[in-house]
Length: 335
Figure 1 (tube, rainbow, N blue to C red):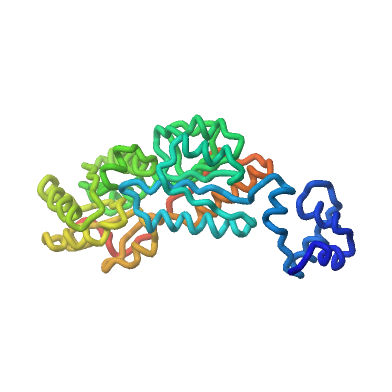
Figure 2 (cartoon, helix red, strand yellow):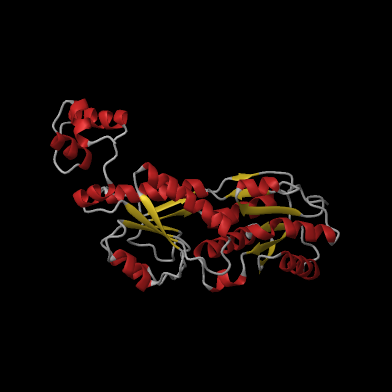
């Protein structure tokens, strides 16, 4: 095992200089710091975690708060989590994953200990009850999601309102006049989960601007529910020719249900979605979609947190613009 004395000998400095250069506890010349860091990298030196924490008064652990509530699509959530973990490791930090319903009490329990240095919070609601506590904590935090009132917080996410707008605008350009949003499970809207509400806002606003007839339909994440929604849409909106799907598990079952009911995709019905690219590409009829940039959001959330831990000022709001990719599921409306 490489010791600090080995690094000092290799860099031609004292062990205390190595300690100061790596911890930042005392000012060291840039040339010396670079020489020490190069020696540490070459020898594969890594400070002992316990000693590092004692020296810096930090645990080098981030908390990732992901309450696994009803209606959450776990595979997509885990894409965010993997990105957070891998980026944190690049900064020599570990991640404590909190999946319970962590309200104020749970967050305070974690924040009041030396377990974590900072927090990343997911599944943010529009009227988020944890905000007063997050604003009062000495430990920095980043929210993946935007509450209605984000003042004084650091938030990052896909611009879901613009994503909903992009899907409708694409259908409108193709001449579709009657469109529907098949959205998240009902409980997601009951909780007023921010990203789902933003999609509805964008979908409705864009449809109104373009003079389209539109409707919104929450849907449970099951093939049976997808079939019922397809039947309801064709019964209540017989002129329907465009659908936006914001519910990953039912994307393929919904297309199959429409086809079983006699509609060809895209010949009779154009379908767009907000989902990961790999899902949109894997459906039998590849789906025109706005990508969920989970890897980028997770990575940038950690980067923002590292800057805050380092005392740097960061932007309060980071909204990633939607990227729509046209595939085989959309076509101009037939006359």
